Image 1: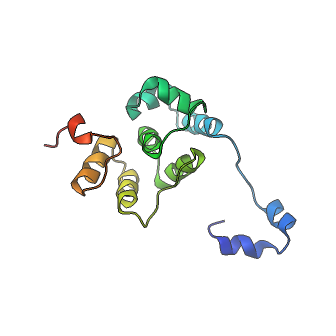
Image 2: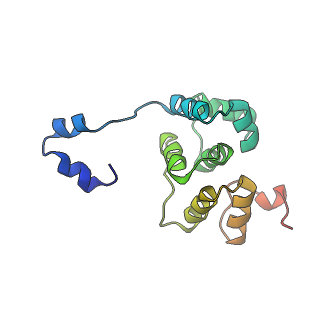
Length: 144
């Protein structure tokens, strides 16, 4: 279902409505593990590519720690996710999905949709005067 109107038109009965929809209520750790398996990614590769502290990243993926939005975005770039899957990762991680009404989020979505790396996304955000995903980005890698 793509919008609330469709959901509400299914039935006037709550039980019938709930019965006609499918829900994926897996916890973040299980969902992320299945996602990585389906994409043939290892946790160690995702963590290395995300540039997160390895201990913290393993705790996030194990469901032992909650992460802030930017840390989850680092994981999304490390997994080379599309915009829709990134939004699901963010929501399952307990933060807001990307919004088409926020300049920064539009830039991030554009970068995801075009297969850009985390470095390229941070560069795009920096050039647009937006906060980068990694704090202190200009100190991490200087622009050419």
